Amino acid sequence: MDKISLDRIQLAHPKVRAELTAILEQAEKALTGEWKPRLTWTLRTFQEQNDLFAQGRTRPGRVVTWARGGDSWHNYGLAVDICLVHISGKMVSFDSVADFDKDGVADWIEVVKIFKSFGWEWGGDWAKPKTDLPHFQKTFGLSIAQAKAKITPKQDYISI
Image 1: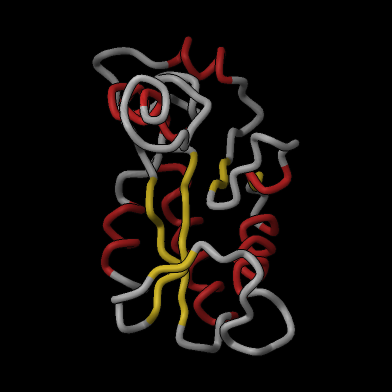
Image 2: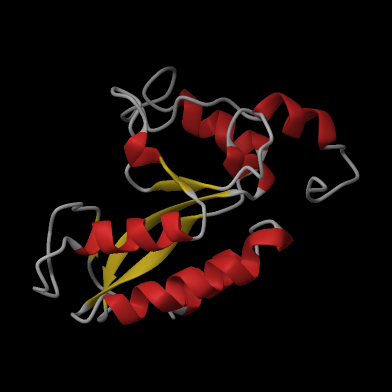
């Protein structure tokens, strides 16, 4: 597993770290070609979330999120975004239909199936226009309102 993903796993909620490691290990075994999964985001601060929300609205760039700070599972360490990265480390892909390992199944979908087997929700299953192919979240049955109520300024992660 690449060091970037390993480092990002350590930012995720402690309750999902071992599971994320297992997911990525399984995904790396499933993808037999030159492309592997990488975590691009795990934990995001409320400010980072608000900055992303501003993108395409009050700041330059395209819209990349529909959630303000506190309204994203990233803010609680319970969401991740992925990409596929070439083993050279020099190319990334968000192509959800490419079958780089030529096994008859899109590499992205192979990773999706593994996340889902661990009970993660995939943003690609959401209704358009809010689909989010790189996004996975595990909410443990909580709503965002419940997560907001659990967070305090002196706490790093909500209790689950």
